[in-house]
Image (tube, rainbow, N blue to C red):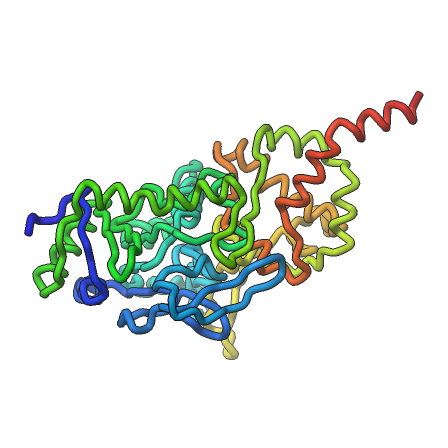
Amino acid sequence: MTAPLPGSWHWLDPTGLQQLIDALRRRGHRVVGPQVADGAIVLRDLASVAELPTGWLDEQDGGSYRLRHDPASGTFDHVVGPHSLKNFLFPARETIASFTRTDGAWTQTHAPAPDPPLAVLGVRGCDLAALAIQDRVFLGSGYVDEAYKARRERVFLVAVNCRRAAATCFCHSMGCGPAAGPSFDLALTEIGSRFACEVGSDRGAAVLADAITAGALVTACSEAEIEAARGVPRDLAARMHARQGVADDPTPRSLDTHGIRDLLMRNLEHPQWDEVALRCLSCTNCTLVCPTCFCASVQEVADLSGENVDRERHWASCFALDHSRMHGQSVRSSTASRYRQWVTHKFASWIDQFDTSGCTGCGRCITWCPVGIDVTEEIAVIRATDGGLASAAGREAS
């Protein structure tokens, strides 16, 4: 067996996948992967391939998520759930400093020991794209978030190429999937009962070599087999562009992104913002499940004695009334203004800030919205009436 090298492809069976998990754990990684829990497929600590959601499919649509058992489905035929890499690299709650009062004076205590390095199994193309966006936010925008940097440098990514899309997926419209993009260490393509494994980094090659040393039966893929594996997400992308479902699966969404920044910026007073506000609950679900939203607030939390204080960072949301305040009042007091802020930031001003869209087409905001608000539909309405409103206003003025 030739030693694995970056760019090489190898076959893994389920036993080999278990050896891969074991190799990561021996190296001190905390391994997390998709599992069925509380009626959804979420990312949890993973020790065995038996814990993976083999035979389970997710049915997603606006405001709807259901699991369906299908014995014929594979290990990774589900799509994305409510969790993403953000949950682990930019956690919902973290202590950024601790202070203790001694003899009336406050001193900062030592920072806690760093978390063990993380390995995530089952990362999709849309979430790899989201990771690249968060890298720009936390590492490449003039300020480096040291806590994020420490986690990011040690994360090991085992990606999966999608062969199925949910009705809420529109990654093909955003150029973020369904094939796993760069930055993975290993990438799996499920074919039959085996996994074609592409090595994406030196670290990936080293871990796969450890699995082989431990007894994993790994064989090299032929050129024809490599092309067949690459064709799996490519064929799915073609079906998504054609808006064709697979078997009993519904048709995926799509979004016209041509000139989307200018489209939204010239329609800040569009009546669709008020229309969607009649349905929006300002519950913040969309920002919580979004893999790129990065707003946070800082609070100081004291214990009952008042002698020890932790400074904590929490996820925040632009949908909250008190998110943006000036002179003691909310800058955006209406639901319409807050929804507009989220959409125009995600799809327009984010491009000005970070030279990329803030959306990867994962569809989570559609699935987990309690009232099923669909951002692709809202933007489509604005596009369909773009210019017509201005013309109507001109006629009324005359």
